[in-house]
Image (cartoon, rainbow, N blue to C red):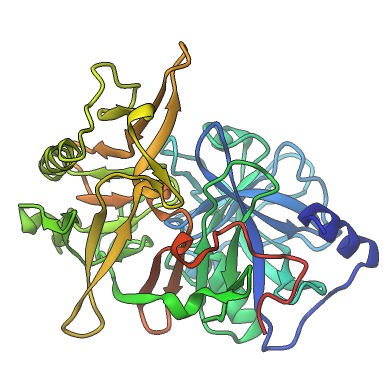
Length: 442
């Protein structure tokens, strides 16, 4: 049964309810071909309507366009200014509206500043409370999350996002992120996991798991939670939101990268760049689903590129003289042997702090480092999916979507740790092999 057929049956039977406290949830993740960004499909409003949101690891709050198609929901309401909840949201303003009352248009309404992380834009929007529905992990029904808090915005905030997206799902460090609110309603641990798809085909969705430490079963019956390696999550004490909040730490997820190896050769790096400056918030390593590729501080990038090219020379690979923008390093596809792990190129290891005195290796094969590009003349290339972030980069290493695809990633806010599997292709599965119509979790 396809995902669309499965959701159709759910809506036909209208099996919407508060599920017991042992419930966990799943949601499909799709990759947009045009933007290379990821979307999350969840239901919202009453009656519930399946809606696509941009998946953003770094945003503390979800938002939705209330001006062009939200329509009236029988469960929507607003948050008055000066209330406890408005204060908890960190509101800096109070909003009035002089049109007919409805979603995003109320007087004395708690005002927020939802952000578009792709084009770095922000608007003034009213806080919104409505009902959200998430798929129960056993495929039987939808679980209701009542009084879900998000923000309204206007359609200008959708610029640069994938077509069909009407909002943003915030999965950042916040009591009002999507997983945190589900966790609060169901008294479940605030643990979520992502398995990003590498394919842009709509029928090959990845999976988000909410509020469960696993197991996470993928075809042919493989529990990927057993392959996780853990590293501590690190809090950046300085937030870089467009509208700044005094003494507010970052809602983004940082990890302790200690070095980068290429074919087991450690790069000679300025290691101070790998730590976070506690005063400015600059430096360190964070994970981002709104950056399609990994971005490196210039000094790291230069060493990275030089070492990678030296290693490919040993494989008798020659860089093309005419790379395709925005990539800097490309190879003729005919010269590269492709395995089930992707192009046969040097292996990249991101070396992380372990839970103990050991170090852990997040290994990236060609499937996560190289991007297939076809030029206008039909010439096919493999290009290295890493970019120069500049000498004034706020974060020294931003691990982007390409490098996280077909990896199981777990964000454990209970034990403050990040779990990573490295490529699940090694285990004869991929992130598109979770069956939404089957009992994928006990």
